[in-house]
Amino acid sequence: MFDVLKIAGRNLSRYRRRTMLTLLLIIIGMVAVLLFIAITGSFKSMMVGQITDSVLGHLEVHRKGYVASIDTLPLNLNMKPAAVAKVEEALQQDKAVETWSPRVKFGGMFSNFTETTSIRINGVDPEREAATAPLLPGRMAEGPKGGALVEKGQIVIPLLLARGMKVKVGDTAVIVATNRDGSVNGKTFVIRSVTEAISGPGGRDGYMHIDDARELLRMKDAEVSEIAIRLRDPVQLDRVTASLKSALGSTSGKTPAPEAGGAGEEAGPGSGKPQLEVHTWADLSPFSSLARMIDLMTVFIKVVLVSIVLVSVMNVMVMAVYERIREIGTIAAIGTRPSRILSLFLAEGLLLGLIGTVLGTLLSLAAIYAINLWQPHFAFGQQTDLVMAPTIGMGQVLTVALLVMGVAVLASLQPAWKASRLDPINALRHV
Image (cartoon, rainbow, N blue to C red; front, side, top):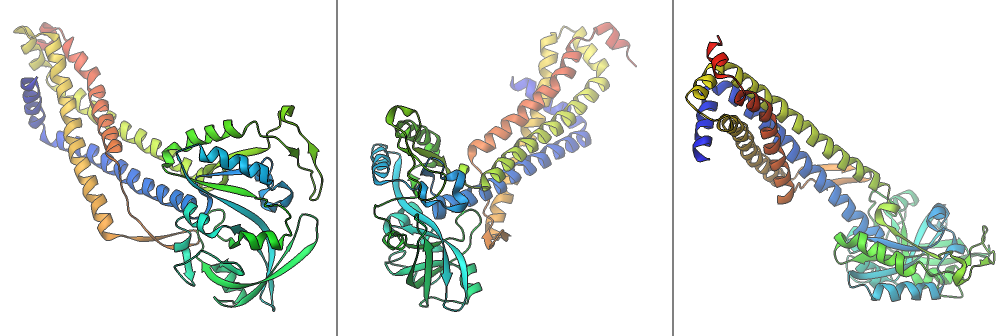
């Protein structure tokens, strides 16, 4: 085998210009694909991490129908204490679940005593919310960085609202909200912090203590709008989602009335109407569509790479066979087996793919390292100081490398097969 590769290397060196051009095409293709995978992959991971670690969590549990009406944050679709206990029991039994945070979400009016505007509020347990969304405390643009996320009598507001209403940390504001029965209630809060805006749902929400939220909405029971869940390993997302759906699928209760304040229609355990729904971050975030587009573009770029390698290597091998017909006839006439001739040309294609892959991979890794040293900044949506830090896994590099080498050998197969089937007499007569 080594002798075959040695001869193949000599044959490639006989046509240096053609070989160099082919290698250059393969290297450019490798660098383009690996850089694209590294940059888009890191961007995707960064955005998903921001969404899951500062807003949504990896999973959320809601009462059936809540997500379909989430724009209005319907209070009549909150989970009752019994349903919350059922969910927490299921979460405690799954070791892949790290922690979870109950939330009360509602829409209200924010007033600085001069102007009034609308605001979306998350009533949270400060400690559990900080554990479920660990990046949330770091989003504080103004206000204390340490301590509890929010305390009773305090509120955290988004940066856009703070600028628009011309309020700052320490100012007093009034939150007015309508409860399920339609009555209006207001409560005074002190602004504790101002959060930076991020892309995606929840990036402009305010936060208050969950007890204050229930008091403002005059809740008699410890109701919850949603339960956000953080996993120990996001790779377990699909398994945990299926497990929770199975565990909560038998939970049933009242079918909520179409209007707030309705009593609902009783749905018993045997009615087949599940009360709870489990949603992943991808179900709740519009960024999931962009993530799927990135994955699709990655596949398209790989197809382009395959086409470049296929065309360039096949062109070289076809020309090599055409220019060496008499040579092929000579070695066939002295007794060289067709399988040996076939292996000679396949080895040339393999060498082209191998050398191009090694050089392309080294250049790509060097470019990725250089970009990480450079640390270019870019803007996305409301965020203006994101740092590009491309990374790529060894598995992804090996996949692209094996793909290139496999296509190079495949491109050599037809010319090699043709060379091995040449008639020695006709080949020697070729001019």
